[in-house]
Length: 383
Image (tube, rainbow, N blue to C red; front, side):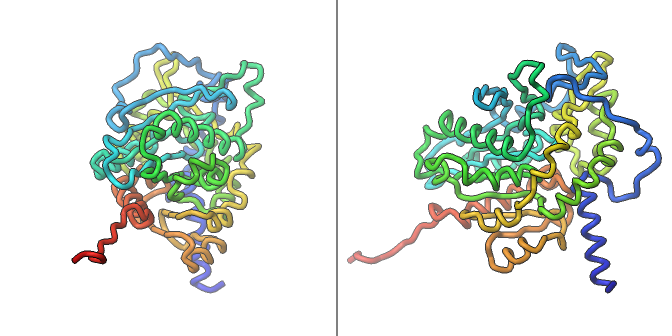
């Protein structure tokens, strides 16, 4: 095997480990001895049966969502059988020629607050003249099912289920909030991290035509089909070697930072507590057990690269590291089918690790692709 080929394979393996959230070092015996994770109770997103959840207990001092978003609400989308928790900030005015609206979708095991720091950066750098929406997908965060307990186990977590949820959520926020803005000024950008990137890509062609006309583009954060599928083959080991409960929110944050799953303390302090909830013994337990999604893993990323490259809209792919494009993405990039940006100093959660760079990249993506920002001056007809 040539030295170049060997190095590419090593880079590829490292990327698989990063997608799984593993640290760059070797697995320790202590990590492998953490034992089996507690099983979920009857309701996804509401804790684990091995530990009794206590929603009434006073929370520790943790960073509040309102430092990043203007509002936090819950909506019951009836035909989706869920109460969806979401966060948002609206544009302060509609005087500009173009109003960018960023609608985010997080990855598996995460929550809408993974985009908190990024939203704060966008809103500040655009003088509060953009909109940002981020929600907790089914089985995640504070989103809960409305089905009877005996039917909870029938809930599906395949890609189509997530796509239909996202489609319904986009329709809801458009009719609830965006309809009040001049439609010709709206420039909607769908932004997804990891699994969320796949959901955004496959959702675009299914959303209502009047909304689709207002979509400027799709941005995917650190997701490549080939790498993601290989990562899923190792995910069971990762799940069994990751602690599922901690004595406090602070210790949960500290563990994720010290093990390299979060690279920026300020982002970890808002994103990590959202993944846990208090239990009776005073500790915190992880809200989402990815193992319950395992029957659907093979649906999440299949065909993603081809669909992304051929999508009839402006496209952005941001990766944490290079030498990881699969064949479809390499060809598409050479043909100029999408914009590729690489952050060399970021981990897999690049929206958390590099929120400023992500914000600048998204703003640039909006500016360079939105023809409403172009003003052509001419002296034609003037005397």
